[in-house]
Length: 108
Image (tube, rainbow, N blue to C red; front, side, top):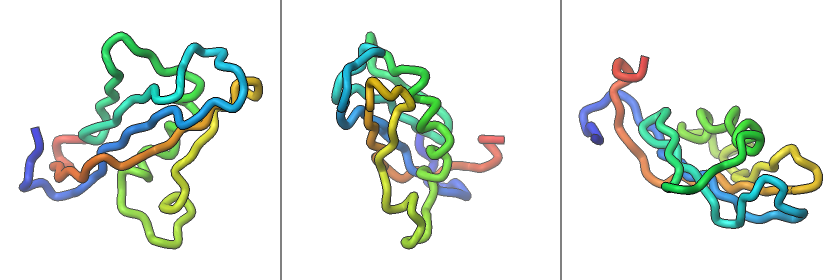
């Protein structure tokens, strides 16, 4: 549940498969996605999956994408990330879906 009296703000994110420029070796399709909400809750649509190697490629950037970034920061301007599989060439897009107030004490 969203708390409007929190002491910090983070964005919820959606990471989706934007395109596959090679062959899909992991079984994912354009449009597949997961959501990162409430700081650390990873949600997948029922009955779907997300390749762990694609997840590993984008995971280091998600904490930064959840926060406000300086306008000149490259990460504020870039929202596309690539899976490391050279045959697949799967490209993911990270989008902010909403801004949420949270209590930092609840997260540590």
